[in-house]
Image 1 (cartoon, protein in one colour):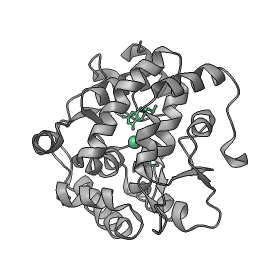
Image 2 (cartoon, protein in one colour):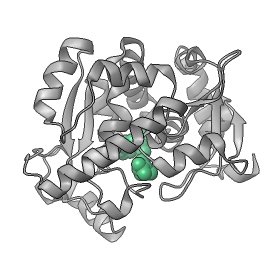
Image 3 (cartoon, helix red, strand yellow):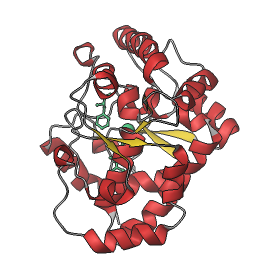
Image 4 (tube, protein in one colour):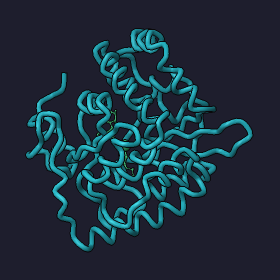
Length: 278
Ligand SMILES: C[C@H](O)[C@H](O)[C@H]1CNc2nc(N)[nH]c(=O)c2N1
Ligand SMILES: N[C@@H](Cc1ccccc1)C(=O)O
Ligand SMILES: [Fe+2]
């Protein structure tokens, strides 16, 4: 199902990812080991101050409700303390990981209401954008929404269904769906302005502004099959942002997993669609 930690550690090092996978458990979790320097605490505070101002304007209300519920931090969060609070709210907890982990292992955590959060923080040279997920992305981007029951349930259901669809050979296609919604999704509800909810936008000062305000941002109406067929790159601004008309559209996509299985059957192993050409 999931490759060994040793193999994955070698792959990450080869790609220049900076997480330390040598101390991972088999499920890719590590200790948070809360020993951050004063400089790192200052970077965290700077990131939170700048990003909170921007998300007030550009983020969907569901994310902002999550931030209010979580009570954002002026210090790097202690995952154990936040997990206590999260468990009471929606049954979720945080597990520390060294960085990106393989999709199968990632979805098993989601299916068990465990959200993987990277235990290291970006440097002050990366305040606006970082090519791989760090603690600020995973925590500030993803955790607030997990305090909201509807989204919290959706994320667990995502993990459960993903395991089934991966078994059908759909891991690349289910990762794309996650990527273009949970990571980089936009939403425009009837009579409302365009808003962002994807965690990769919540945590990036530069890309959040680009996705919503730039005339060069390529907005594509959400279509399940198109999203599952469209490739993505993790280390640059997205060349397409899919726009949901409501969260129900996304939740309904998972009601009939048979449709998703059929899409996987139709397109598995075929060349991906180019996001820039949609
Ligand atoms: C599901 C999809 O593969 C997605 O890119 C996953 C992969 N592994 C990950 N690993 C971590 N630590 N954090 C993430 O957000 C993700 N996203
Ligand atoms: N680009 C995001 C981090 C990220 C990288 C790769 C995948 C997902 C998120 C940021 O700058 O915060
Ligand atoms: Fe993420």
